[in-house]
Amino acid sequence: MIETLVFYLAATLAIGGALAVILARTPLTGALSLIVTLVAVAMLYLLLDATFVAAMQVLVYAGAIMVLFVFVIMLLNLGPESGARPSYGSLSKLLGGAAIGYFVVRLIGAVATGAAGRPVDGSIKSVGQLLLSDYLFAFESISVLLLVAVVGAVVLGLRRLT
Amino acid sequence: MTLTQIGPSHFLVVAALLFGIGALGALLRRNALTLLMSVELMLNAANVVFLGYGKQYGAAGAHAIAFFVMAIAAAEAAVGLAILLGVFRTRQTVEMDELDALRDET
Image (cartoon, rainbow over all chains, first blue to last red; front, side):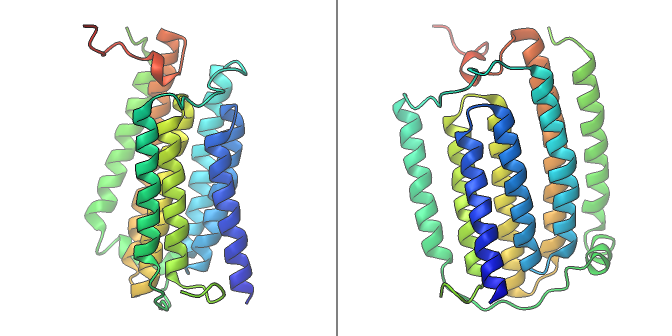
């Protein structure tokens, strides 16, 4: 019963925060709403037995990535009217939005089958063992990718793009 | 699928809604920062799907995949925001409609 309540609380927070992200008048409001969504999604992860992923969600996403976003928003110092209105004008964008709505409706219809679910061990021990055995190559590749991203971000930040 | 007994399909519905909202934001908003945040929303929806199906089939590998998605999202955000800063320094705007230097002029 408590699981049901927590699920609906987290789902409402996640979807409400997501709506606030795309409807926000300023990027900073959107970034703060996105933090709400990310923490609510971490609650969903906890309900799915994914304790390690939930902790990483709060640490990496709500911590590191969103600090980066807020930092850049402050650095750009955009005016309040910047990006205030969504550009609803063009027909192609409306058609694209309608296609996404249709996609979501079909997806909900397709997944609403109602399987029970099984217990999964999502602790840091089991996931860590999995990362260093079955997913060892991907794990090491990720470290190279992150190194490339750090070097790329520093190079892009140093030079003037002309 | 009942409303009170929470199963993996409930999480998949939430993920579908999150992905739809993120895709709508990426299509409709002109601000590049909001665009990047919409991409983060879509990546989160993908993670919820991975973990939901991992719960449904008892597969712990979904947790490792979700970890990889998170690392790639971090790399994407770092490089994307650095590009955004470079664009802002040269063009003084982050509105997507005004960044049309590669558009065919004819």
